[in-house]
Length: 261
Ligand code: 13P
Image (cartoon, rainbow, N blue to C red; front, side, top):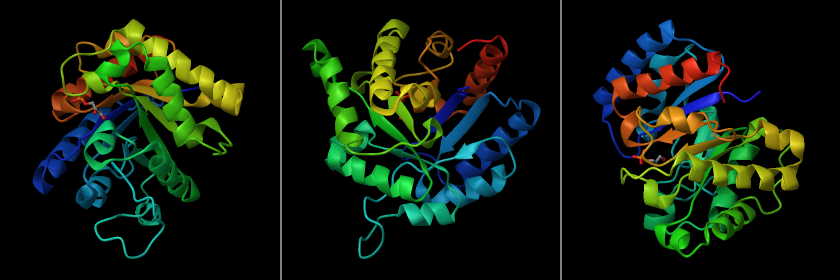
């Protein structure tokens, strides 16, 4: 059965002491609010991954990376490999975020290479896809989503649904305060699950978590999580404040015990 994943993508925010403070406070919260059907996850910047892991060790929370190199090892200044993340016991890694596509020219083919490096190292990729406002207004959302899925997963074998996570993040909803309506989000999530079913079979499709991202906050997360195919949130701005992050974990715990999702 799928859990609810409440994932904070910190992007390029928080220094060493802010990271420690947040993790200590999160640890205190999670000691009192452990729920096996909810997985909180934070993604700090590379330099603070092990610090966050140290503070949160043995607590029910995942510490993820925000990106990984498409190369296995060698002369690639500034890059971090999947094997290096694996040696830190990092178990999740975001790839293909729209900010990487937009500002660093990442293509589906490159994201596919990153996906392979992660799978080779037993790390769960959180693969981000999503359409721009222009593409939505042109009625091309479905075509764009399918083409991103086909590009990122071209000839990739998935043995079980717990090996990957997909995040649907409409570009026009990221950092804009404009959330997709729960209906709009559910429609695309159903499309993604349908594609997964055709590509990887019913069992894998039923087990794969599909997160929604784009201006998720305590005020709108409940309605999103109530949708059948939305298994959590990939949250930017609202994940940076401990109170709002914990509020969203709390809401997910409530929904999971009410039999929601
Ligand atoms: P916001 O929640 O700030 O819109 O960011 C979403 C996002 O990009 C998460 O990866």
